[in-house]
Image (cartoon, rainbow, N blue to C red; front, side, top):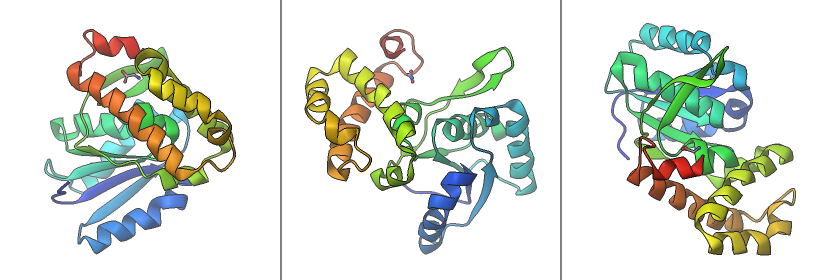
Length: 216
Ligand code: GLY
């Protein structure tokens, strides 16, 4: 992955506190200029109001079409940052750094980007494929246990629909995977397999004309 120009990192407060310094250090080491914007955690940030704040920030920073928007966080941050990346300057390069099981396995893959309206979730959005999705299993260590477990619903869903072998693996290791400190190698194995399934489906049907709808 080659990043040109400036990286505009969007995250939420908890994720930024846990992982922001590490990401900033990596960018600095690579000689990549960066700026960051922290939104409040939670679904309420997936709004046109917060998107508009981000547009204001990008314009103050004089972001250009060759710069890159990077989402660091879970599904809310990924959807919001993806929507902003899809629309600001009619589209900017976008990279996803998902930090939750749900985002790694589902939300960060496939280019669905959206904000909510009072009338419903994800009503305004776009398909805007990320240039890359980098999922670091180590970031899951700081997740609340309940949120970690919730994310497995997406993995189980992929397995039930598409992959009996993955389902068998999940059943075999259910105890370990639902423990408070699951083995990172097992998490990596399960995530890699589930992510590959989602990537296969969305690359054959990016705009959800048929096959992709089976995931929903
Ligand atoms: N959540 C399933 C999809 O991205 O289409």
